[in-house]
Length: 174
Image (cartoon, rainbow, N blue to C red; front, side):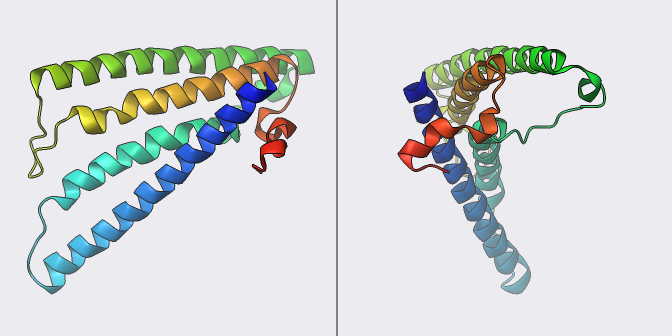
């Protein structure tokens, strides 16, 4: 199980790194588009479409690391009043719900990719991108989230804090 946690944490780090690159690329493209439109009076039509795809990449690739770090939104007004056992069970049930949602998103996302590729669906924008390419981010991100949820369920079941797991230190990941 320790090796599995190490691999999942490494994959989550890769996902967040790729999300950061996508976010930086989006920022650069938006600045480029603004300069071209308002300074040089030559609007760039394809930037909005590409930035939209990069936003999907940011969200889908960063979700697993956010779960791993305990950064997802949580309402703790009720759970903070529970006993340690009650908090543990609530955490396990919540993480199982995340895992189930991620599994469904991965399955449906993969079906969407297969369908888009089968019919040759292209984007409506100026890029005319085969839609299965940006859509692939959905099942990939969902699988990353599912793996992180599985690790987090195991940690919560044992009463550990998955966000500060010592199992990843041997690989040099902080």
